[in-house]
Length: 354
Image: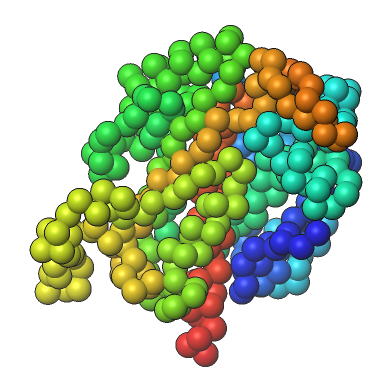
């Protein structure tokens, strides 16, 4: 299986399955001498881990990161950083009913047809549990970036949408509620709605918005490696993501050029920021902001018609522990992938000046 690595100068390769012994990763290219804040890494893992509230999967995993290499006396050595995250609460029997059955809108069918074999326990490699490795690596990338501020939050659950511009929001509210929405009143509505959806045995999609602040000018390469192109790849690699828009996004199609152009101030900053902090594929020093769309989780606790490995129509119903809405736990994943993109371009930019 190819496609297990992300990045160039700061490169993450992940391994492991949802119900295997452990997940893990190797970070290659992290500079030597970076003092790691292990408590900060643990805090990021706690934001993503299952079982953290009543509106997420109740699988109980500590999601502690064990470093195997690349770190000595609390500092990175410049060699590959190897780490594992042990699986301690697998319930593989929850998946025995889909051993020979394909769940609708899941990776079961395509994996089986592509590889001729699949790990049906929690989806194996296709499980969103793999993103724990990304959060661990992203936590290190954040520490490398230092002054850059990365903030993601839930801006939509189903038809409940946050319409406020990010500049008008109080980011300190994000971690005060289990939905991770910066609007306390809307967060309560979202939480109640997710609980209602769970009782129905159904799932619901949503949106995560992310803001990158204090990003230096000059990150990104013209043509194929534009900053926003790599950002799009990063976000679309996350499970259940169906789309991303940055800057003015699709709303910009309703404007004229005279309305959409970001006019300059004398110091090179811009009066508006419809560009979303990227021009010509290169960061311009303004805030980078984007929104990621997540589909409803594919596994639902309702009966559905599907097919089995023999091509026969059968009836199935989801079992086990699943998220009724993925976006509350997706917030740290979006931040982590943004951090990996930034770290990669930061180091590439530094290397190009040597």
